Image (cartoon, rainbow, N blue to C red):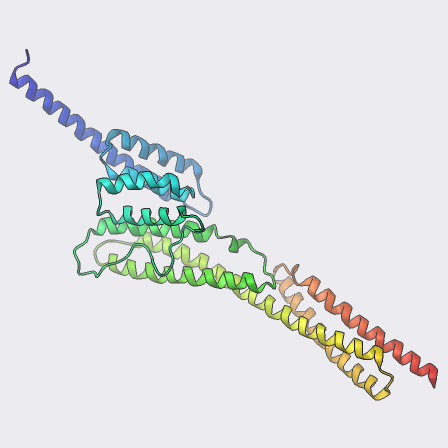
Length: 326
């Protein structure tokens, strides 16, 4: 039969073992979090994400009451665009730590994306993440830092993988409207994150977060450039369309008239259109010289040229016919 001293010693040994396992769990979360940071460059390093998954999984095994590793797993699934798989981990984390701003934010994003009809991990400007209370209110700045870091990294992943960045400029007004909509979304987020960092900067060093925000801002500037090109293409296409319709109307008139004075007027109009066509060609050459793909404008330009050639042929035929009747 064990005496009291032996039981007490055994209890102390178990407590020490638990303490070690809890420490290992915390260290595994830190390792996993660092691996996630290292994995998120211009190209996602999937090997490091796998290592981070192993860290969080082992961390849960060492201490199933540590909410951090559940948050790590939830964040990983969000990065992999698997919000439904993230939900049970995030809910478990919040059951263990209900006031976690990081957990609350990640759960909001997972629920938003997991809802049918939702298409983006990016929070809307009307509900930016995470929501900031007045700075004078008591708060856990470390938790707030984690929530902000998670939201920044998700926003960075979203903007860097936005299909708009891979679009070739085109005279498509619908696409242009979509680009402007996305720009407004991202620019609203940048403004919100900037405000968050100002609050955090009062208590915590935020240079790492500012670097991430800078990466988001540079990606958004690429979208601004893309939007400007789309605007130019749309404007050029609309301008050519108007002049092509004018050329068509003049061609129809040329086929039905026999008035020499009207023919002279049509020839003057043709010359004006030819000058405009040359200006259009110069603009296309300028784009081409900057290595900008003009493939979507070339068919429009060729159709315009063909219509001018039809008008020119019609005027030449009429001139020959009038010459023969003299």
